[in-house]
Image (cartoon, rainbow, N blue to C red; front, side, top):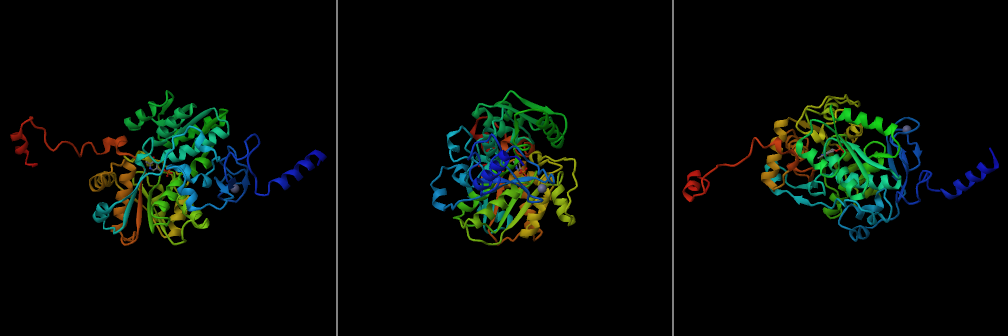
Length: 436
Ligand SMILES: *Cc1c(COP(=O)(O)O)cnc(C)c1O
Ligand SMILES: [Zn+2]
């Protein structure tokens, strides 16, 4: 060992008492209170940077923190968006100064009518359809955008089942970054348009999401300076979903619900809501208590629920065939962790048919005035099935997450609803309909 490197290593060990810190070339504080990227499989820690797979075992990396003391008052005094939780996210303290889409702090609706219809006595809907591009994906993209900036990325990109492309395209436009989004070519028209309005680089790929994802991995490996939000900056992206968990607890009056039902595509959101609850307990922001986490899938793409029901640990990839396109990931990256969490907490993973998904959309619309997309229809229908099969306790406080907006998947229900009558503009014609 040379003298120079000895000095360097001494400096490093005295200075960095808290762990690996940020990668070379990244400014101090770029990731707030985050300490490192930690392998979920073997616990190996690496520096905060554009890494997503463990160099030791290829396991997925997740952001680890050295949290300071955080109080409810500090959070409550923050902005009415996800940055109120910035101390718990991998973002800098001056995050509010950079243009972003400021998602989050969406309403938690008390859903008495839906509860009565489902036979659940205390039910809430966390309604994420009101985010800037009308899905929960704005949360994860806001965190990914911060990471992309700090890592000096030139292009902001993603492979997407639809909603992610909408969120990336919008956030990239607002940030003034070059944005390229990749989608399966058979995606619903409204979701295509909802990306193309923000970017002239929407790429439709012949194939399903898993094909699109593979292509993105290839581009990420070949091209310099591309931040694929859910590939090479995935650890930072994924943390954004924690804010759903924080908000549910805060909006319930700083306590955890007994049961939560969450739709599952890659499984990232579900695992992060659990992580959020665990962090709130560790930080003393909520009282520790048991809670159950349930996953919802459509049975045309239900690799996680299939593994759950079979009682196995391995997920067998499937070829998706369902109207719930936002959940159509046949090879879910976080599927095995969803299984762990559902089993550990006493929850379950369940799936429903496309017809039940449609019924779920109409049930939520007609009971609570909330128009959800197919993913939300899946969640409502799975919740109903969980009650009917005795897997969900109808007396326990339950929150279901509406992750998206019905206007993006109009075709799913457009054959089932429409005018009750088409009439001449006359009173007698109206009386003739029998509606009055
Ligand atoms: C992406 C998406 C999900 C699932 O998210 P994962 O974190 O990949 O499991 C659920 N609902 C909607 C509307 C989505 O767009
Ligand atoms: Zn590892």
